[in-house]
Length: 585
Ligand code: ATP
Ligand code: MG
Image (cartoon, rainbow, N blue to C red; front, side, top):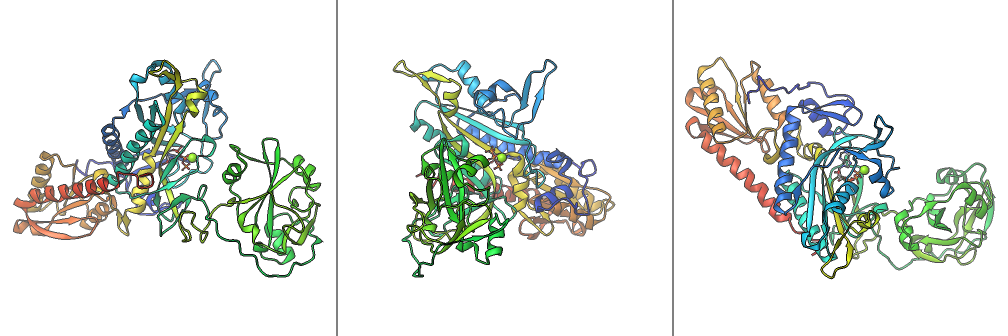
């Protein structure tokens, strides 16, 4: 490709709306353009990167025996209705001319399960893994970071079908290898973290998190034992309770007019949120539950549900709150609560004394409340969202936090979808059994941003060779100089003949502009045909280290081929090093 013909509208100014580094660089380099919130064009360079990421994905998925299909982007409502997902907020819904409902596919568990339910009958046809690379539509509340969180985005989604749980473990390990190898080859070294399965249920699941300050997720990490989990999931270790040796103070009901939130109560009573206990009223089925956490902590609903042995909990409605607390929302507390309510508390609350709680009376709070004297707790446990400094659940260390950007999520679904959708097979004992499923999603267009988000410098993007828009850029500094022109053209043609993806920058532009554009674009190898060409030499540079070497024109092609081979070898070495799941073996 010749740069004079390439459409890459670079920008000198940093677009005001772009906050993330990758977003700025992709816009400046002419890789993407915004069409609407969360909806982007991929221009030639951006789309080349996407296609190269997809190529790596296909190679790794195929190597694990997965088979590529393409499911429809338009999904009839009935399929999502079968599993109760038709009403999710993220669905883009549409109607046909006959008023039938459809949505743009946002993930394809139902569609793929329908394929299998129709056409797969016997255990002999298992295991099976089907994948696709496709544009998804999700009406995200907060699209951000260019292609990081789009409303239309490209995703790899794979689905495994197995006969036994052991077979699912094997299928999952294969996808672990495919995902880990893909990320390594794309220049990413994501942390693999335990994740919450949320409403989907299921067994193990892990997220691949690229560590970046701009990431939306908070990950708890133990630097000692290697435990890593999403904040939604991270367990907090149990430690002996330290009761302070303060004297018990008398319980007192005080007026707190209009003070409902923690901030309002703490500023009104002039006490630290650490001396407050929040009382959150939930419903677990018919049971009303009061969950207590320290004032500066957040309750983790998944942990509450798991303590109560239910799938999910929901916040109680205002009528229920009024019934059990006899007060408006915002004044619930454990003292004198309706007897039908079960009181549970985060372990941290066990060590607290003389704390503030809601008064179960509008505009009032108790001060100096104490467990045992003023109310009883039926169970203590790990109920709060883990935060920095919390004890590790796997060793004696404490947890730290990093921010992460989720680029992949692998999931043992089990029989959740196959049971809801009546998808089963005949086993060798003649019994009809539900398929045991896994699902595996990777954010291909999010990777277009994640890669430069963590691989860039002050001059621009630094692409790993496997997914760079070009492997090599040959810069012809002065197109009017015959020696430079001959050298550049010769190397360009020789490299092309060797199958190298090479760009020749022969534009009629100042050298400074060419260097700037080349660095911004971030191809890993640069060959400069400049003044040295008169002496029969060119300069070969590496984008990542900025190293430069003078090489004779006759040797330059062989030299570049060797550099390219080494770069691919390095990425393959990294891929091999990460292919086994250390958390499960
Ligand atoms: P997130 O928590 O970031 O919203 P998710 O849990 O909704 O992700 P999945 O449904 O598991 O994500 O999708 C699989 C992968 O697709 C994610 O790991 C992520 O890399 C990518 N992805 C999800 N939503 C988007 C989006 N709106 N834009 C771009 N990529 C996305
Ligand atoms: Mg999401």
